[in-house]
Image: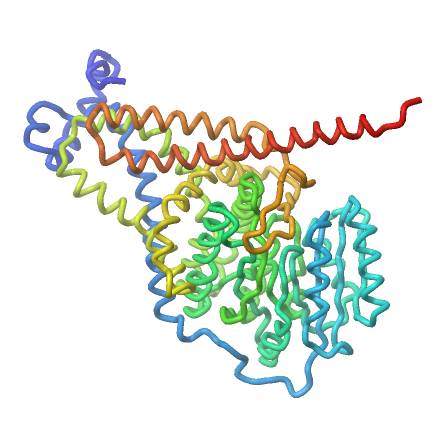
Length: 545
């Protein structure tokens, strides 16, 4: 609404007077020409105050990214490459492989696990299968074949998914014979020497968990997988090193790690009241005094989701789960005897997903803010906007480029090519992750949604329309396209008002929302065509009476 229309409302006259003195302070940040002809009105304040409040909060989390970069650079040389002491007698180890409807990757998983270098008399492999489709009989037969060949492997199938993955892991512990428990999700490929390089850390009785770094089989499959790899690299390359090296709490990532069984029991076992049972257990265990170790030199390869909606579902599950853990454990953490630095870092670690609903608020306010600020001068934009942009948005670029450089020092500049896509990928998560965070805040419970994996490695291409397990996205892509169109209109306004500097920033939003909505609808359309072809082929081959 144009500001001059607000001046005609008698109801706002007194409110306008109340803001006059504060407005004069802000006037000092505007151009001389502007202050002679315009003063902020109540409507302007009602738009600018929440907008800059949101931007300030996002900037604080952005500054925390800079802190993570600093922490990484300080502690990166302290990360262990081998255990400081070794067992005189190796302990028994149980390897748990939780799966649910994983027919495309389960054979690869069991095959790679069978190759692990560890004395077989000290090894137990549990295939924890909650499958409800053909994966169940297929995996049962596969396990029987390996068992006949002499592999110490057993098959445990549950007829219900009570507790989901956490329930399956806890159920497996009832018959686990190992003092140490290694866990690998269905889409991971454990290295042959994984146990040899991780078990000896448990010779220190205070060590409760050892986490290794994730790698990616299909990193270069598409722009989407490149973006996912960069996002995860920021976590595994920078954050884990900064937190573990700095004596802060950090989390087991649910897979590619190894835990002490007595630690799991001492911390209260696997609990399924959050969607990230791994982070939940991690904080409960560290509050009990258990020591966690991060070993980035050990890389465990995995498969990234290749479908847009699959990626979004995975990220929203993590966002909701971490927010649930924050609500469950932050009060306990803040009241504990843990050092202040640990409490502060725990807050930042468990609450970053609140930025997604804040981004929705900022997006809704952006157009009226652009209208209000059309009358403002350039000086206040330099004084206010630039520091906030550096703190909030530039930190993202620095964070992921540095992580990429640490992993790929010879071609690290390639990361700059994917920065626009990475920013757009973050935008593409805004709506679905905002819903996930709000569901967590309001206590709305949902089931554990698996992420489809298809045994894709390297640059191998598959026709996704031929693949089962695809989830329907519902209203989400249409909402994303609508919001993308809204930002397209904002670009038009920015051009008409000669605010050309805002256009590249707004294009990231347009690209992110259109990319998410358009690619999801296209993939689902291809799946529908394939289903129709299958029905037609079945009708042709069906015998007539």
